[in-house]
Image 1 (cartoon, rainbow, N blue to C red):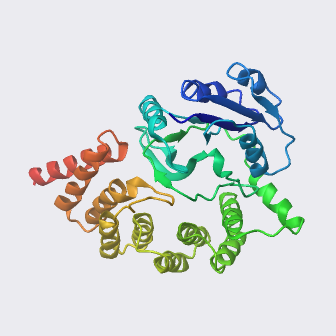
Image 2 (cartoon, rainbow, N blue to C red):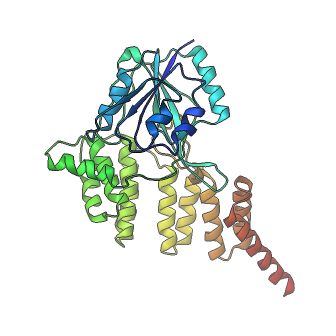
Image 3 (cartoon, one colour):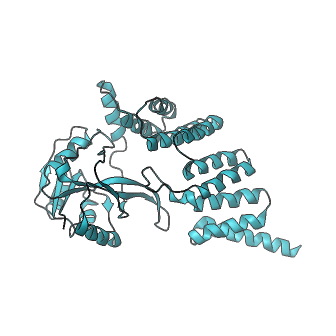
Length: 360
């Protein structure tokens, strides 16, 4: 059976650290906690679970901190989590089972980072979660750090949930990027993409547009980031009240891969903004037929493959006064999310329409 080292970097994580460690402590063979400068009792909580608690002088570089954590590991494999991550009971058992047979170099695992009202994941992507220590994998990137997977890679369905309670410093990542730029430190393609994302999140849309365009002009951008950049570039132009350019950006994503459901839904939304109901229907139906990649490497919104298109098709057919078809799509959405407020509202709406028709 393979042994696992949990390698974490933390700072001021007292509200969530115990929650994370309680769900993983019985699976790990050792737990390594690297504190980067906490002012609360994070380290005291960590010491309740492990003696391997170390200080790391924060230098605005997440990779340096994670590589330091990996350097302290002694088990066959290194697994990383953030303090606000959790693994539910079902996936804990799956992880225990994986230890029995693990021999690959890298285990990619789904990372669920947003949830709907019924607690279903609505935004997810795979991360390199478990790495063989003998391969000496290294983290790269000051912000949004990552390890480049190589060797034998397996895609597991063991999911980690990101359950953030609060954002301690929402400007931190943008500040680090701008510090790197001020120091004339070159940004690689991945850094450029994530710098643009930070500008987008901070609603600096004009500047974000330019950095996304700079990224898309680079020859070595990752396909999934290129597609995501087209989508976020479109969102920037929408925020700048330029829906036609926003639409062009979404079509540009087709240069990198076949249409993704998320992109098709965004095209449908712009068509709806212009009340082009038939065009919107086409794109939402295309989203319904868009296949999931066999190995989902990029960002994924599962609802774009069913629930969102069903609900939007309901709206489109309602606007075209085709109430039977609109109601049918609402019922399809309800089979996916029977407690959803939008579906229930639509149910009452169509009951009223039927009542009015019967009263005539």
